[in-house]
Length: 394
Length: 133
Image 1 (cartoon, each protein chain N blue to C red):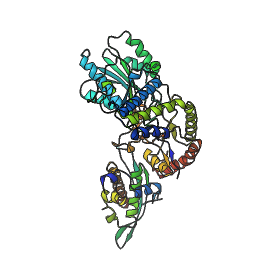
Image 2 (image 1 turned 30 degrees about the vertical axis):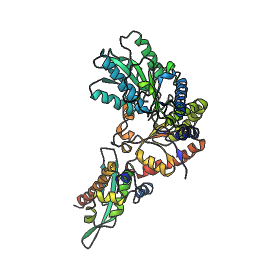
Image 3 (image 1 turned 60 degrees about the vertical axis):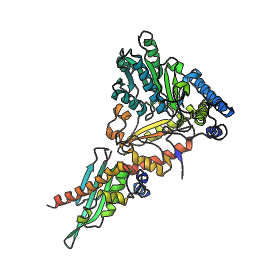
Image 4 (image 1 turned 90 degrees about the horizontal axis):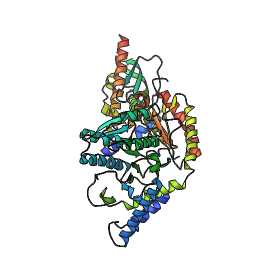
């Protein structure tokens, strides 16, 4: 049977070169970086090199890069840590945070937690029908107590790229005149593989991403924090990560995420090649009657092709494609634990019935042209079978 | 069935999604129904024909159409298999639990799909009785 993995926005296969690096630190260089014997020092060196490598990729200073267990943990640390520091400072009674309505749950639920504790107020930036934030509304939402703006770089469900550079530029400008600085965080989890993540160009103060979307393992993440950003650590214990995140460093996985970052730099053609395949997939699928593309038609990351297929429920498409060896994802309520439709599609003005019919193909560096051919051969048949099964005709 | 296994779809259920039995329409049915699930937007439609033998009502034929997830498709299909040729009064006694069991179990979050199938069958029979009057 075929094995066509088109769910790279969910997670990726770990690259063989990454595995090779990791294995070395499992079995040979397994020392604790806090120890002063040879094995400990070797592990510490590996940690330093990884930090340096990733900081170069981000155009950051090497001591501005922190390792965590996931992008979710990075976001919890940055958001909760910043708010705790600001509240402790005592200048602002109730800090105000601005985020977008299409963020990942990691951001939305972290902020909801702080709101439930009555520590912050939140404003959501509305998005247009393509899922792009409205810059004018964003600017209007800023007030004297605003301390944090958190906007994703690229959306995980529909692939739309958000105007991070514009937001960063605007904040840099107004921060010059403000009494209290507005810090800017971006969730770059889906972007890191494809977009320029130069923190100076983007004017971000914090940036998060994880390893498992870029061919490193699950269980490792990065948080970039600009110098002089106040943050209180959220995991207490030893003095690892310059006191910002306690717990023995996961050296093998940190070496792995660093290797994965190096591979992104090496494969510059990747963006162009994947974009071409994605465009062919989009063109082919839109030929099927009753389909529409979700997300921005032009400003989207190379990996994501997402659709509404009218008159069909998403999970049934996922199951039938899986039977044919094609692995994809859906934002249908039926595929969520709580049976709630996607908040991203809802924010874009897509009603619950239509979001029931959503499907996401996410390509990766291993996707081939013949994979796309096979999908375009199999998928239209699955769509017509399922429509035949449905009591309503589109 | 253990909790770990019941979190996933059984092989039997997946077979019913790939090759659902009794899928389609019946022309001029004796009874039909359409039920929907407001929680997730699923829609299920049943068509039945009834025949009488020795004063007893039997389900002669039954077909379904479903717009919904794997569990919705599989539950609506397997219920048609379970009741076809059976006495109407026995068919109405089949519970949502029995439907789930016939598929090798359903994940807890999908149990509402079997309720939908049970409901759709009842409504199709009600529709037949109404038409008869």
